[in-house]
Amino acid sequence: MGLFSKDIETFEQLFLHSLKDIYYAEKRIAETLPKLVGKASSRDLKRGLQNHLKETEGQIERLEEVFGLLGEEPKGTKCKGIEGILGEGDELIGNIADDKVLDAAIIGSAQAVEHYEITRYGGLIAWAEEVDRSDIAKILKATLKEEVATDKALSTLAEGKVNPKAEGKPARRRTVARRATKQPAGRKTTARRKSA
Ligand code: FE
Ligand code: FE
Ligand code: FE
Image (cartoon, rainbow, N blue to C red):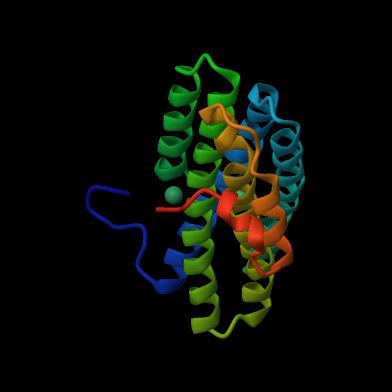
């Protein structure tokens, strides 16, 4: 931003700025995920993060496709939001000695990233729809779907396995299985922990 002129004047320029912002963010996330895979102990968590790294690489390609559709060269602009979220996660992770507690912290940090991405993609999709670029909206929606699914998968893993282990309890397999298959709760529910 210049001192005497403002760089963003139009709605289209605002979109392009957000596109560059999320492009930068996705690249930073792709750099960070392998480090989280290395620090995670839970095999499910490692696998989940690895899968999302592959998805993230595809998401970067989708963004490059969107730049192309706008006649622009793919270029990032520093995203202070993701730098803050990743920096906070890194600091937290560096302060935890216990492996199981660390897994819970990795999930919490990863979910903060997913939520940032969800808000940005939501905004970009709304813009694309506003200006009748359904071609662009469709590409971005494919990524948004992956971000939402990742967030949900992390919640399931945290609630079913990682959080109970961090607390020093066995995994709540039965509860998770029942929730996943939507089976009605049977007699065994009495053993289930009451949720607040
Ligand atoms: Fe992403
Ligand atoms: Fe940003
Ligand atoms: Fe993501």
